[in-house]
Length: 330
Image (cartoon, rainbow, N blue to C red; front, top):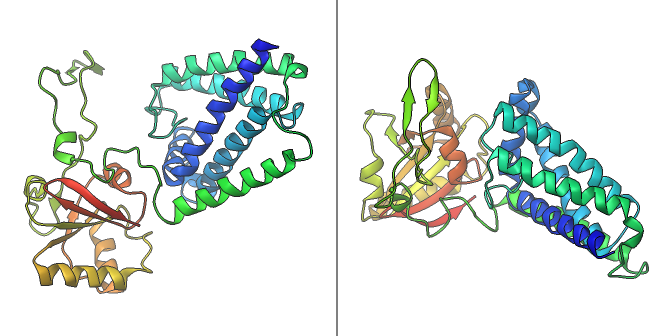
């Protein structure tokens, strides 16, 4: 009885945490689903609504399953679902560890980043726990009575859905990425004294020769669209306020707030602040965006993945000063 309930609470905590961090950063989960689809050769599905639907259902399923296991609700169904979940995820993460098609599985978003092998060994433990809970499910005790378990279930579903929609509409409530408010980008790009950078040796095939310290921010590079000049150091070390309009793909960007964005640009010009739109879009997409929105601000190019990491919104607005993130808006 003690072992089965220990395993039950272990699974509950993991599923609750995993579902919550996915709901907290739904766009991050969408990007990870797209990585999976591309690794499986299903690029046609990655551009539609499938990644959004899969991301939201995954967060909802994991969080509610965690609630059921924690409170002892649906003692027959919940252990079976947990076992089926781990029976599917364990071989999947073994394939990820061996083939390494993506860098990490994204189980816990950016809150806890595990290597593919660490994820596989973690799932081995959870699979053992799921088998134990399913085998001795009769020993699972309730924390609530059957009169109120439906209420806990209902409020949990409503909470996680509205929380997820809020984070999707605005920005993650808890930002675990290296560009969170208060983050020093310059410091995030610096290798601490005494640490050795990752070294790579190229012979005939690409191979790593030793894993060293890798800064949390390593692809932050801004190139002026107009002149081709590298603006990175100039922007990060500037004493003035700098507004960065972050738009990975202008073709898919939401232009409903562009009147307000243009007002912010006019305000920046009036007060001598810098305003720059960072994008990974093509030159034609930039021209189309200027024609459709009346944008007069300058543009600069940046890596798509970095832009998606900086802010979970397309577009989003970031305020910098001396390389420190002061505010972020969706």
